[in-house]
Image (tube, rainbow, N blue to C red):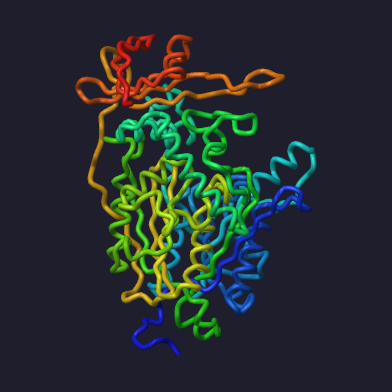
Length: 509
């Protein structure tokens, strides 16, 4: 019998499963195998075995990167012996996908259009790379290119503006590194002080991963080792060496079982397995990083957090267990600031998994792992609340979910939070005076035998006297030397058609 006053359509998470296939273990599993196994483990976790798996009427899948499938959910359902009426999949790229899909699933259940829904995702980048290097064929299922789900969730808009592309900003590590120095500039920190700040933050995450049985790299790391370039920790893009960026080369899967409270009760799921999604909100920042008013802030995550916490009827101080999406240190710092959270509170760490460097960064699917981990913590702490964030592209697409084993006071409602406009005009092709707002130096591997890191180019974000923003890429020796040997944040510069010239040595020290 349901608790008094509970709507029978109340969505409830009743099973969570995770799987990690580490180097040295036999086999080369693919995304379908890993996703299916994670759901089998979720079935066992629910206390009723595969009963709910086989009766699922909906399956939502996070799009895999290691082997693109048009409808991963259909392949996983076939592996499990399920015949869902509806399959849903996220767009090809975006770490916001798990929370967006969970919002869709929970809302569908709350609307009475689903009784049992599965949510899963996985990546097999490590096995795929291993197979390619060794020439070993993989026995992964194939799917015709014209196959697709019943619905695709999310935005697949391209991530780069023309100005960003022209400056050679083409991947997350370079964008986030640029955002990191923008944050340092705003905080007024020296290079050394900020390096220590993010090293300590990342070291704490590694300690959490060391206690996580599903972490890809479960080893605690000292802060100094994380921020210091070394042969096994080469510099990628200042201020980030390799051990401060998301690790995508993993084999991992996670799966969740959600159903209505009435279905969970009828299936005999023990009440101590029940975890409720109290609220889920999504929001989108100004799409292009270079067009944001402040590259070191996120109005969208602030809006999504406010909406999710408000719908759950709580404040951030009521949340005991937190997982902030942690692809790069700046992402954690931005989110923490928007939530009003300190980044150094040992009583309330900002990750439950250890983050995407140490726990693993399985493509778009990281947050499914954080929700699965949270569910176990909330069962053990049934009066507490948990919060997870999800993030896509360059701190662009956001999701926030609030969870608890405590029943919600109102029926779940997915929210798309409104974000106040905060745009800065780009100045593509600008020439004239400007000041250095942020920068990152991109590195490449040097020649054998020592392969010492070599600075390849510096990307500078500069503000014009009118307040517009220009991105400049420079690779001449003098400019590289200025940005590798010095710290020209805040310096005056002159931008010409083919040159970038520093005029002062003023910095944020």
